[in-house]
Length: 470
Image 1 (cartoon, rainbow, N blue to C red):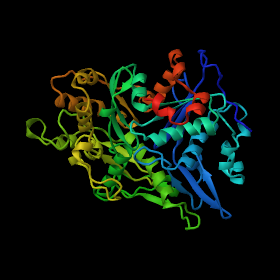
Image 2: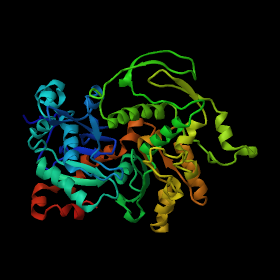
Image 3: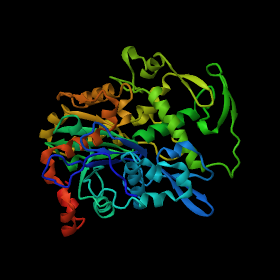
Image 4: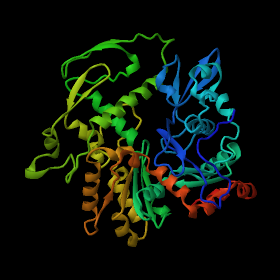
């Protein structure tokens, strides 16, 4: 049964009532919704689960990952840490799930993807496949990172037009879309996503490609720094146990050992270690949002502050923040809550990653140095305008003190130029800036001529994407 989408559609691209599907696939989450909306209607994990029933492989998508830790359930991500798709078959499944599960009309009982019992009886991949040509009446605008290779760009068009039956397609980089969402045609866009931080110079809506810079000192890197801090925590390391392994707990005083009963799962009942790490990441995300703070400057955390007092000592004198973990253990956090994010600005502050996912960073990977490298790679005449229009995007930029610290760093790096950092105060506007920009652009009457129609695609092949989507 083909999904019935809940928004009006049109095949006439000369009219103003075109309703496009906006798809913003990220490393952590995939966002989708309709052009003209204020924020995405569907936000689902990009990771998917795999488990075996009677020697048959099953897949799990979306929020169902959080509901039941199935025996042997392992987690996988079709997108690499560099932001490039590695598994196209599964990426397509996740993207399809993002809109077939959330953007459908009232007959949701027809959609087995929303039915846990039915999904156990039927391979959920077959449920996705049953949505034959699910976008036959919706043009698709997809977002991409600034360093997406040509083959990947062509594959995105192939999926949208050939596999989903979309009548038109467009591919846009996240940088200019975030600038448009902030109401700017020219901007220096700094995006701190889950797997990458990027700096993109945009002038009159055009990406200055030579200036695109990126590194992996982003949200997941900060999560690894938090794990490292937990392991060297005093008076004892913090044992991070996700909720699904907690049977019961009792309240304890601050700093006292947890009084907890763990759920005893046999190896046959337990999910894969990748599932546990996935659920631990949810708790770390909550810790980041509740406790972590960026030292606002003007000096860095590892430098000397006023009156020759080390800045880290000043950080210890600030009010501590309490946090309670799933097992009931709770602690007050002071300077360490600044330290775990400091290396985004000063590589010397990095804690060794004992999981060996990220090597110790270099200065060139930090955000200030990425900005310097970006502006050095483009014509010098653009720098003053761009530094007056610095746009922030991504959840990590919402960390308290982040905007102030970045402003301080850039003012110190470019003292002769007026620096202004535009950071939306609304959480959704910051988290989903690229999606919102895509929603705005796809709704403009002047954008209709930009679409690559299905007819053009069939005439010129996937190579038309590289020519039309600059």
